[in-house]
Length: 583
Image 1 (tube, helix red, strand yellow):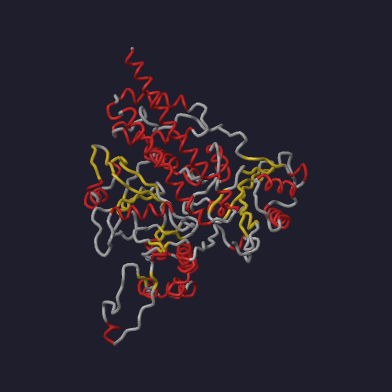
Image 2: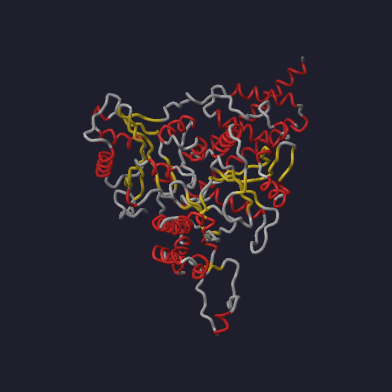
């Protein structure tokens, strides 16, 4: 009995250290997030980007810190399995009144998976299934505020919305901007508009900060109808704030919360309440993506994996090699009934690629930390994932054994993949162009050019510009997804191809001029991007500057000067006044 009592006390102490680690993480996470308001008010755009990168690193730092403390204080490698079972039970008790229990459970898993053997990755020891319900969790004050236009009118209600955000910088002309919001809403709502007794505006209690913008997120309720919206705030070129637009279109709202954009800075004591509100606005957006967009990507990753396991239990199709041109760096496979692809870095990466596995992982990590400007797919990175072997096609099994034997471990009925990335599945642009109509091709090529330019504006040079490395989303946006050759624009040297010295130079198969590692010659892209006459004419009409070194040199100079370009998550057509330049 004494041994059991001692084990229980030990398990309780371990669970308290685990919760200490999570609480420290979330406190630091919130401090960084709360500071976003001041950075926005002061237009500290370089600091915005730095904070975005640093906040992503917080989680792994706290996990390692907690692991080290547990190993030092409890000699975790010598503890019996009965202790670990009790650790989980004590931890559950500690979460009863917690405000972030779902994220704390994920943190528990992250720490324990670094300490325990893989055989213990079961629900008895870690949270394979969630334990604490978050359905009715709310914060004090509540996650959102309600405003009632029936009581004093729409304009006064909107004024209170902005007053409650307590921004410490002035608006250029708030009265004008509020009238623009009302005019846009009038176009959206049925006319004549008949207010019901429950007519109200619900707005999440904090602003969503990202890049150079801030967003008020909410919905208008009238009777049984709801109209979700997002109001975008920017700094005008002379400093004060302006309302740039209000977004009502569901596609615009989905784009704002897209998997191809950087995470928001949004402070919340109870993330589950914020996610529940966002899901009422964006019912087709998976819950894991909404947690990701709040910067809680580790919990988003855990939710995705639970969704994946659920899908496996309720489907019967087989994993197969993904359609499209096979890459030199990645082995890519998919499950047709599941809208994602699985990517494994090959053991041997053949010529002409000059990267190894660690370099490729570093490129993917760069993308995770960088502003993706709506043009780079977010990835979920996993280790030691067990797949049911019976669900793999023979062709795929053969490919895995041939290309990634070091990462594939045969465990009876399961195949354990040591490291992989998971991304949203898109139609490869090269395949899309093959079957596209003339109008679809024109739109896709325009999107392709815009994607490259927006990536460049965010200091990202794609490296490999081939169409096969870009995908077309369900909303027909073009997104880049092959990262093994990306570089910072600031590290590239964009050059003009020198004039040939002799006729022999012009006919030579090798360049007659010296080429250093990061030298880029935009004129040369015409050779492999413009082979199809239909593509050539359209792309040269829409984006001729892509092939001009001066365009790239000018962008690089702006980046080196410290200027951060404006890349809006909505089109110029919906802006109130697209001619107002932002600071």
